[in-house]
Amino acid sequence: MRFTTTFAVAPLLLASTVLASFDGNLNYKSPSKRHPWLGIDQPKVVKRATTDHHDASALNFTHGVASGDPYSDSVVLWTRVAPTFQASNSNATVSDTQPLYYHGNISSTNPICVNYKVTEAKDVSGDVIAEGTAYTTSDVDYTVKVIAEGLDAFTTYYYQFSVCDSNKTSPIGRTKTLPNADDDIDGSVGLAVYSCSNYPFGFFNAYGGPVRKDSVDYVLHLGDYIYEYNEGDYGWGYSIDRTPLPNKGSGFEITSLYDYRTRIAQYRTDQDLADSHRYFPWIQVWDDHEVADNTWKAGASYMNNTEDSFIQFGNVSFDQRKANAVRAYFEWMPLRQVDMDDNLRIWRDFSIGSLLDLVMLDTRQYDRDITDLYWNTDYVHAISDEQSRSLMGSRQENWFYKKLSESQERGAAWRVIGNQIVFSRLNESVAYGSENPLNYDAWDGYLANKNRTLKHLYENEINNTIFLAGDSHANWVSDLVWLDEHSYDPSTGAGSIGVEFAGTAVTSPSPFGANITIGAANNISTALVDANRELQWSETFYRGYYELHLNYSTATAQYYGYPDIKTRNGHEISLANFTVYADENKLARNPKVAGGVANDGYLRGGKITQLSK
Image (cartoon, rainbow, N blue to C red):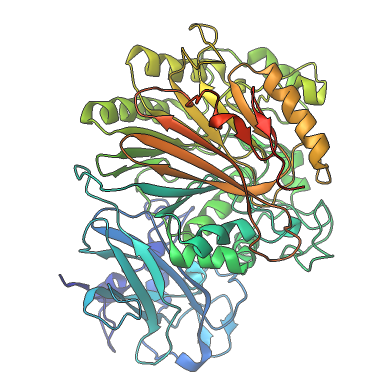
């Protein structure tokens, strides 16, 4: 099959044709073509554009390639082609007559022409399945995001970009489409699950694990892809040569469009992250730090829309800061904008054959009611069970319940929920000694929303539901239970309606201290499991990731940790493996969870081998 989409620019084209040429790059529409204050005022870009030929020798593919948001017949492809590694400070909403700055002989008036092609050959020399042309300028930080269409379902493809009329090419990327929604799948589907990569805290070795093993089909990222802090706040950036950019001194937080572009660009220089993007299609959502710490719909931990906050953050409102962060994120990430009338929507779903439906939520940025901002913990504790409180806003919440029911009705074997924060109850008073033992920045701070979710699962008998979570910088595995309404036996799992697999960070430090020892961490894990009936395993020392492999009879989670993240290396260890059998809605006991053995942390009623010693 051959599918071609071409947007060609020739000398003296009419303005309407030039406008069409820019439509080939999704970043001139995303995150919202209908809301120019958030995205790009495309007519202004076209008004400034010339048909001058660019000099290919001045251009480079500065950050490799990436793919994401696969469908059964298409996938998003991404690259950046620019005259410099430096991020652009250009913003088309500022000026409609002159470029804001020049990079050598390339200015924002010179549209850079890029071709792409997709084949089934590893060296991209075979028959071209899809191809096209797109344009970029400094207005979108020289990024290119296109949709390769006309692809076959559940098929591996290879793709490459090239500068038009030249021999300059990008690295070759690999991607994979989803199965058709009604297709049965032979074998299994593998997902690598990540969260919380903090640049100054270490190398992103975990991203390279599935690349080295070639062990999964797709990557799921649950957020905190970047952090907004500066190097002076924490981390070992100076000692390992990983100080965040832009660097404006201790205590600084990024706020401008240029800041967020620069920070994402720097993170993408980590080789293991770049390799993961090049080898696997990503499905991702943001958490809070893509904008700021503990965000909610009207502010964040240290920032709101008051006059004092406006002055403190350099005359930038929270709304403008959020718009800057969102725009940079959409420019740099290989994801689709699923609703052009909703300029902040990132929640969406994917049907992966008849095997599973993947629902990706936004429990942080979209329409979340006020959260724990450190100074208001007692207040949030007092209102945590108010019926009106929502993590997601009514629109997303009702959509979520509808998707769960539709998935059950269509007969998908599994329902996998990708969300940012831990769903299961976590009484952490034994670790922190706090008078407010729960984390009110997680689902425990929105008990009515949590109970509505559990009620929908139980009353509609929605089976085989697996929640995935990140954010907490620790590993947690729990049965999914409604303790206040249903009986539950921790030894057998009877009464559970599903399971939750929550993962540690790629590099962000343990919640119990960056320099905590294995022994101290395991003691805390023991106390936590003892204090939470549904919690079956806790591990709080390692940085890493987990893989989820699903077939029609089982779902298996494999947890991996990295003993050393201060150097780039591939030395990973297996921490624990867990199995869920279809229609049992609980962690498998054989006779104990995980067969009664884990390599670190604390397993309820099990043995810890501590192979890491």
